[in-house]
Image (cartoon, rainbow, N blue to C red; front, side, top):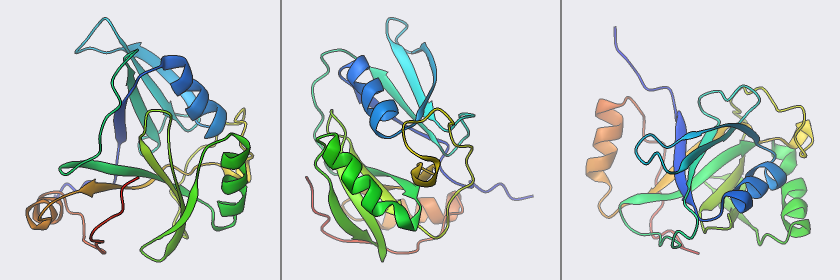
Amino acid sequence: MENKIRGLHHVTAIASDPQRNLDFYVGLLGLRFVKRTVNFDDPGSYHFYFGDNRGAPGTILTFFPWPGARRGIRGTGQIEATAFAILQDSIGYWLERCKQQHVTAERISRFGEEAIRFSDPDGLLLELIASNSLPTVEPWPDSPVPLEHALHGFHSVSAALEGYERTARLLTDSFGYRLIGRLSARQNH
């Protein structure tokens, strides 16, 4: 029996202001604040979990809120962007929602799929990709985002790599992923 990784379980990042982090991911993106635990590696700080109504794998974005944390700098050897899947008809809704919330967003194309790119308050690059193949999620009924425009879990993450071949081999040979495309010289914001 071959074990295959079926997708992303969760993505973890750092936030500098716990309340601002909560306001952005619940208030703007409409994710459910699933739980708050203690960071087991640093018991003096918390670990926030955002996701769908059940907190299902593939929808969970977690944060270590470290007040006053210095803003990170994107570079080679790390995740460049975290992308969520949205319905094809939701691009206009999300562009308008970002504008109303004073979040600068731009329309982009990712491997032929229409998308929106913007950053969270700590500079984490996020993308909302309009996809024909949406993961099954349980929407949060109390979300400020209407159900027809809700996030549908992770679409993908992008890594900034110099010489992608070794990482591609690891992901395809060991993890069972398949390479569907690559972009070079991604523009940073």
